[in-house]
Image (cartoon, rainbow over the protein chains, first blue to last red):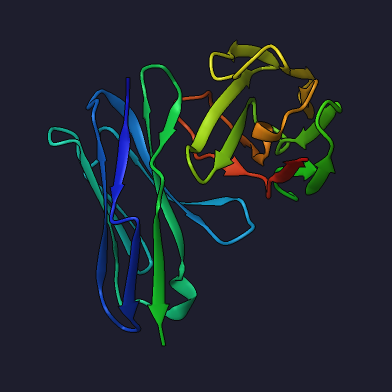
Length: 111
Length: 115
């Protein structure tokens, strides 16, 4: 059974800092790994999707990497801004076709 | 496209009442998912449909929960009778190209409170 873990549960950083969010998964037989953002009271917004054959994906100040062999993915946010404050969730999609989510990292970027 | 549309956004009901949550997926998407989110358990997949057919309902917690997708543009999640432990935010999501290939798009969620 796939399990996805995100550590830390919460992170607070000053504006402008580069930061890394971590995601680990127990079953390396995945189709893809997705990162989402959730604002309070809102749904999830897809940020990046990494297919199992890929090592990383980039979108603007965001870069997500995938290392299947170690069961890890990271989301790198460059030059963080207060508007980046949100909860970031990763999700692994495996052979059961289910997307299994971590519980998220709540990020606060202080001006 | 307006995205995935869910209704109601908020529902407060009393224990024992029937609750129906509704979802309109993005036009052209052929897979639809119902998730439940709580602080304790995070996001849990309840059921998903592909081409209007339920593929996996193993996440549905009890027989009190049922879901239907009568056509490609509409799905319902029903709880009857509701209990306080059903209080959560219920999300609907859709994707194209099958359940294991596509970017997932979420609705804004239906926040259910059962008193």
